[in-house]
Amino acid sequence: DKKYGLLFMDILMDGRNGVEIVKVIRKASPRIFIAFVTGSTDFAMEAYRLHVNRYIEKPFDQEEVREILEEAQEIADAAPAPETVDFGGLMEPVEPWQIVCIEQQAHMAVVYLSDGSSRKIREKISVLLEYLEDRQEFHQFHKSFIVNIAHVTGIDEDLQMFLTDIGKNVHIRRRSMGEARRTLKQYLDEMEKDM
Image 1: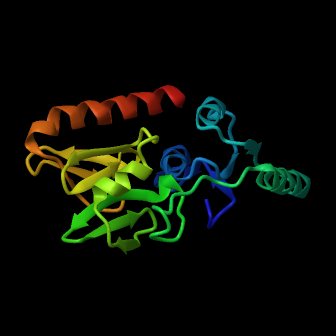
Image 2: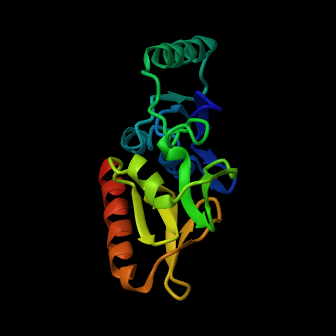
């Protein structure tokens, strides 16, 4: 969300489907303004389910593009400041959706972010979890890890790990595997309902 405020997305591309790409983008960046650009009205329902802001058919004209730019700017100007987490001033503020997971490494907690970067904090993750307790997407299924379920792409049953969209695997203790499966399924079911 910080990097981009507006996305024009073609639906039908060589070897790719814009609808599937937007599903991934919406998961990571729920507020970005998205305009579907297409030669067909067949995907209008998908656009609605994905909360796409505009749907324009090809060929489009400059006036349509200008209207979209103005609308995106108006929405950005009216948006409240995003909620952030700074863990009590221990790191620069980030929006909660940017946090993929947190790992305890000796006396340091490593916060892994959705852009692939990480931040080290001299604190226990049990303390950091208190800053996230009001947020339903954060869970602790292992003493050394907190995971943001919104960034989980699957579970490796053999290794007992969550797989995340940045490639960082998050351990799950054996006795928590059932709860971890149920939590991921519930999250995915809720995402499906929202689409």
